[in-house]
Length: 65
Image (cartoon, rainbow, N blue to C red; front, side, top):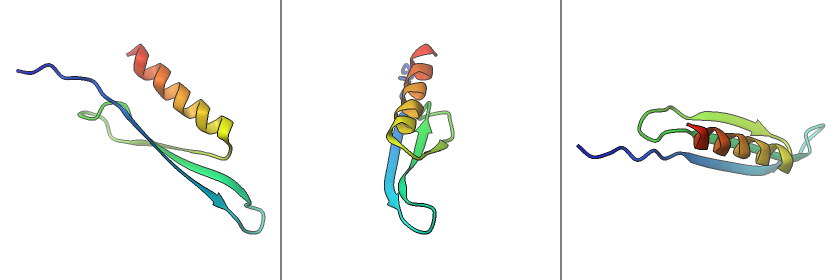
C-alpha cells in the first residue's frame, strides 16, 4: 500500500469584463484541497488583492491540515 501524498490545486481564470456598469477585472478561482478526495470549490474576485487573499487563505488552510 503506497502512502497517499496530499496535493491541492488552484486554477485562476482572469478576464476583463466590459459593458454597462460592469467594467473591470474578474476572476474565477477553482480550488481543490485534496486531488484524491475533494470536489472543487470556486470563488470569484474583482481585483488583484481579492485574488491574492483567496489564494493565501487556501495555502494557509492547506498547510495547517
